[in-house]
Image (cartoon, rainbow, N blue to C red; front, side, top):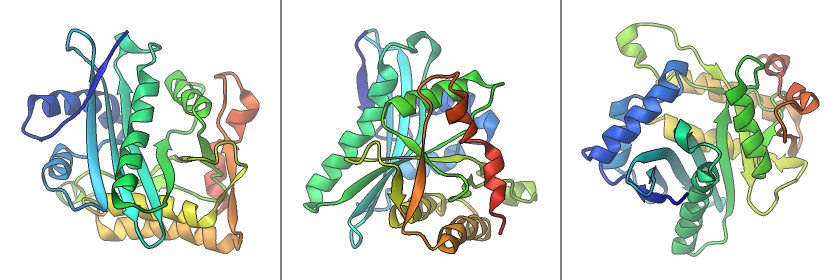
Length: 270
């Protein structure tokens, strides 16, 4: 099956409305999607060359929507690090297991390499994703982890980096306390696939670069609490590298899944 992958150019386009609706149906019920106004602002009010947002749609040969991918590319020129935040990827049911998922995972790599090539520096590229902890009650979460595992991704040990996604709701309107979502910090260090550990400087970049994106719409105090919890754990270890946990290669790989247990998040309370 052949696909056409295109970048959505404007929040005022029909492509945007269709893409956001598809993402909302999948991710909004889990609290894992930014508000529409936030995404519109990312598309139409770019912050500059050092942080760019990319919303991609995949269409089949007949023009029907087949999948959506969005990502942020955050460049730290001084440290020569590029973090590609793989925010969401969605393949609609009729197109699953057709190879589209891999195409949507590869597209951000091409974007990052094009950006790095355009500025003429030799930068390390870290692909960064947030993924649900595996659950026997959620087979889709297992399938996603396996797909990323086969594609060279690992998880930063939850014991080394207690990571949580901030609350994306408009808390000012709801007058509620923020409820962060514990997630796995999943990475692929380009050129170092299969490594058993990740330099702490890149683990810190995972947090700081993603938070640079979240700071555009998340309350500063909520973000500061999550950042401190994650970075304090990294600093407390005193290590120069953090362990990487291989993702499972099959949905019944119980040993690999056990290492990704959410219980390990609570081993390092602040």
